[in-house]
Figure 1 (cartoon, rainbow, N blue to C red):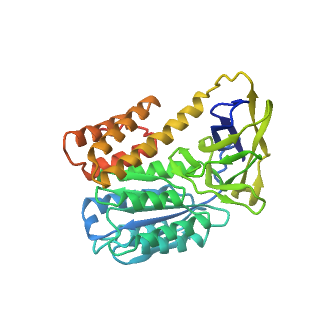
Figure 2 (cartoon, rainbow, N blue to C red; figure 1 turned 135 degrees about the horizontal axis):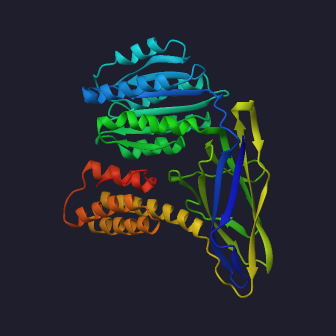
Length: 418
């Protein structure tokens, strides 16, 4: 299994007379190979909310979805299950899938009671997952229907960052309409996973299956994008790098000992592009073909038990010309629009929190137009519906807010209904 790395500038032409130019560098990154080597075991931890509000059909469908996952796992795979109400406990310690019936029995006995302490569930889940992280694809599915009323949200974020440092990926699933989208998004973003919204009980099995299928395609782990910039080239000061596909996530940048910038990518899926967008500024450059940056990916290949492998170092060039004509790349333009849709929606949410309903409605309309420009009709419908409701003097329901957040981050497979 190798890494496919393809850098493209949004406009590779530069004006020789321009003192400063801004460019977006798009990097498409994925795992490639003849076949997907599924002899790399999965190391999966389910962290499940069984507080009183999950009583009845919600918890029954979650147990059903979890039991189905047990049946789908291979004998070499590992599973742990942590459950929480206002306390947390390990229901199924980290183990290979030998006694499926015993695991399923443990899950099926779960009943709903108590409050919600997400951070304690996360702490125990990370401990279980970390026991078998070597040479596995390690993933968390964290499902909750409520606020972290018995816990500390900052503690959740610290645990999410700890998980990332262990090369564990965190996926969060919000069930119903009363969960905190800010904290679940931050946990998923820090753990480079995905945020899912389960509106109705009958969607649980489908959403678990979708996530399970996604992690089945992971070929390489612990990937970092490394890049160096030439003199006279710099990163934007504010939010310089973001992932825009398959989900939009603002990515932190750190500097390596050798001076290069490093961005954690986590897992790489086979033939599923991760698209990263870097915002760079270039000073005045001499005429001709000029190297402006070098990019490389460092990664682990668990199938061959190899760590810290490197792709070839790829130079990126700009054409510095006297009579400048833009050479806009439509593919990169799509990525720029995806990031704009996300940031416009974030601005709308900030305005709504400040009580500026008119400003929020205007920003949501702008985001809806951006979504239409990129052909994302599902998002455009959701965003425009929320804008129209605000303009009509209505409050946005919790469901509206959650749909808005999800469509801002990703292009949904099925067009959502407003």
